[in-house]
Image (cartoon, rainbow, N blue to C red; front, side):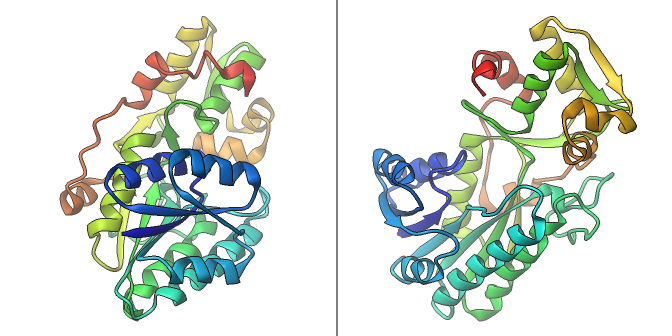
Length: 304
């Protein structure tokens, strides 16, 4: 297939591009800058100049392809309504270009759209009170194209997609521990995070593109839920720092923002059993704690 991808030069995108190319697919990637275009070209993809706000370019890229993978997100952190608007506009543009063709369209959401405090399954409805509720309109828009002749599916990625060069939430925990001199968790630290290795996530995107049924929500979580205390303890042991609990009232100050405090306090375990059974997805790479043991989180932390 000829696959058009947005976000192919981001953190997880290059692994998806490489996975698709290795499987024999041709890849064209949206590139909003020279650096993005160069990165895509180095991977073996064909750069396609444009941005999420350039809807004509999105439409042209999708119309010329056999399939679409949408991974890009636009907007400033904290401007959730702006991020939602850009995501929905992009999805509507891409989906409309594919309407009536039966072509696959895989979009990206997050497991943090699910109801906190219990293990959520793929068929459960997302929660309007969830931390990442701003992503719900985008996934609903994508899944809605199943009724318009598109084989659309959504991958809800775990809050930590780990692997070399990760600059996400786990890297932030490492950096905060270095800065404050303690490795902290909130409350009793029993709250759980799903996790997935970047290469396992890339395989899931390929499988979804190749065979996910129309209207399917999938969970990109190799691990259902890792207690945050376990993560903090691993960071503390590696850095030889005390491991401490902080209260929710002091977490904003400790972690640098109220939003990060909410993320690090979130209890959002999910199941990916249906995803595995449906697509034959079998995650095989390092777990998060193994990546903290063998990866580059501590070697490159000072450079982040």
